[in-house]
Image 1 (tube, one colour):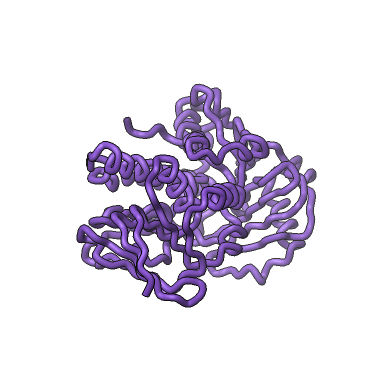
Image 2: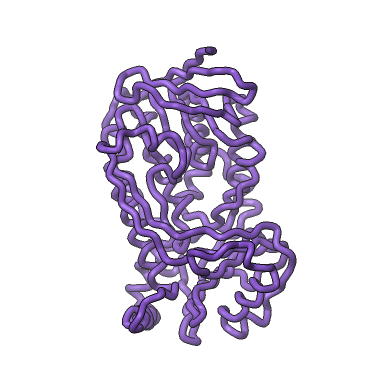
Length: 396
């Protein structure tokens, strides 16, 4: 068995693991990434596309924001369509000039992978049998089999579990030390990616009698659309033609008439779930991103919440190595979870506002309609929505 040594072992080469590695590297902190998937698979994953002001700033801090600013699409608002009406949320006007950026997670991953490769930082892709050891002691380690089938043991000071909901990090924690909170929604999002021009230069969230729909994009020539479907439905049941027909039925008529159609590049159904695991630190192991929490995609919080975890964790580790202070480490879970639960609340609220629920009696539907009408007439309510959408400020 080959033996390696680093300061921080990072499990997972998604955006959170790569971003953490890049931030640590810029502060002179050694790190190694261990990822179970092949690099090509990681680079090709289709995920989120809306990033908050705070995430934009963090990518700039990591030194990987240049292409984002060149090719990303700054957005200063979005549209809510409901009950035959439209409401535009003016983000800068409601939040003292803040905005969001449409820049796909695939592109962020590419930028971070290229930066890591250019810096010559060690990464193990296609790693199998990843296991964590001695996370409660002073000498934690990882064991895994690399892509060539060789056994590796990586000794470190800390382990960052950025390996997602199904990863080895959270699964390594004793069940009686972990408290989980979960809500499953009775529907999912059927999404399609196509090389057609977006129907609008800003996102449109639609609440229709047939269910929710979202008109989004990845660039000025590539569109991302979603429709709400039952939790039991399979993507094989949906042809491209059936999807486009259903999307048009859910968008406002004047918008539907402008939808350009084309063959799908990618088509999938994502179930909707709210999930939080507490705490987010166990000895020398820190959970970050989907390893600790999942939000419904309605509020575009998943990637952004992972980035906020990384911000807290990177600063805590810099304090440890440069200032010999463990205040950030000791408060990591507490700080993250306060922000996590605010994002969970917003994502739950926005999901409840825009989707049709299979509820008898119609009471919930009337409450939803009243909430939308109140939002339409209240600057205070619109401000609360905009503040959460662009990203809440970090704690001092």
